[in-house]
Amino acid sequence: MNQRDTMLSSAKKFLEFVNASPSPMHAVQECKTRLLKAGFQELRERDKWSLSQKSKYFVTRNQSTIIAFAVGGKYVGGNGFSIVGAHTDSPCPRVKVKSAREKFGYVQVGVETYGGGNWGSWFDRDLKLAGRVIVSTENGAKIEQRLVHIDRPILRIPHLAIHLQREMNDRFSINKELHMVPILATQAEYQLNKTAVVKKAGSSSCQSKHHPVLTQLLSKELSVDPDFIVDLDLYLADHQPSVIGGAFDELIFSPRLDNLSSTYPALQALIDSCSDEESLANEPNIRMICLYDNEEVGSSSAQGAGSSITEYIMRRISNSAENPTAFEESVPKSFMISADAAHAIHPNYFDKHEENLRPSLHGGPVIKINNNQKYATTVVTAAVIREAARIAGISTQDVMVRNDSPCGSTIGPILSAKLGLRTCDLGAAMLSMHSCREMCGASAISQCEKLFLSFFKNFPQIEAKMNLD
Image (cartoon, rainbow, N blue to C red):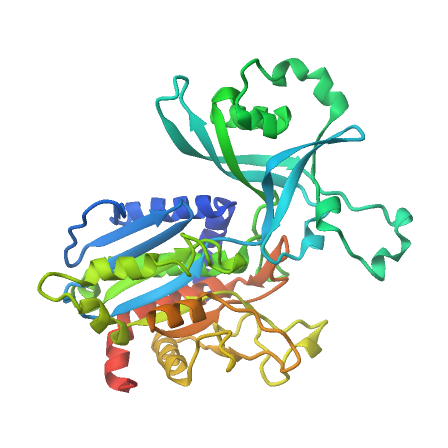
């Protein structure tokens, strides 16, 4: 298989992952499916763990965060961790806890905007619903979480016609509370079909919070009576699938590239690194991926990068009765790649980019640097990544924001400060970040996979020869 075929193969497999991951819970479920197939064992935080060398494990929290790791064949407590971190969430509208709306003949769904989205891009899109539903058994003996994915266009947030807002092309603004209320159905059609969706006596409290049209859709999708729907956690998503685009099939057009374009390569690189039995047998470190929820809203949650989950798991892996300070010994030997999307040069807004730092869509993973600590990269950590990229035979790019421009941030500074980990922020270059649909180079996925794979296989040797304490 030539280089282009390899690139397109990686891109197409990535699109399958994105299309199956309309919510963070679905992304984690897709990760679990692939990890189990690759021989990883599932652990639970509440159980006692018994780990062994050359074995592979994963643990989840809140169904939306997953940490997977492989124990090197030469690992002993106090050795380092080779970590790639990313996030599973993306900006989107989420269904409110009480969402029922009826107005002027329309059945609507109240939503809350999650994260810093480009909300104008959500207008006039065919939208679907996905997430999880809490379901009770008929006798109430058991309550469980069920994933749901209504994979058809059932919602739409329509623009106001330009005839009623002549200045739209010159100055467009929205009130997120008033204007971003999607239409689910018409009341006339609801009345005609009311026998199929009418509330029953003794309906659950959930039915009183959400319109019967919505609860009936969910009950049909889950094959449960609406009365047994206890609560729901639903995300709106673009119904249009991810695709390969561009005149030469060189682009990806897709929702949730920020940050599934990092999540998927991290997952695949860990799996591929462990399929090389000799490499894992000679590995002195723990190879780990940490895929967190809630990065888009600051990471301050029980399942976010700002929680203690990373430290707890690293401690459980490291410490023993024989060496109770193994975790503390491991931290200065460890390294994290904070993988998150980067801004490519925009041909129509090139003046928004620092003139000497303009990443391209095909130029390789972008090392993100900010001396005000919005990113955790240092000259030392960047050198480690450049060496891993050299070994992999791929290029890297650099980016810094202009002095007169704001700078976003990532999980990198959070975990670097919280754990004292050496960290490098990097990611695939893209356009339309935080829009309903984004775009990146089709080569970005294979480039990130190769870099992460090189990092997992070579970090201990890179560190030994660079002597960068």
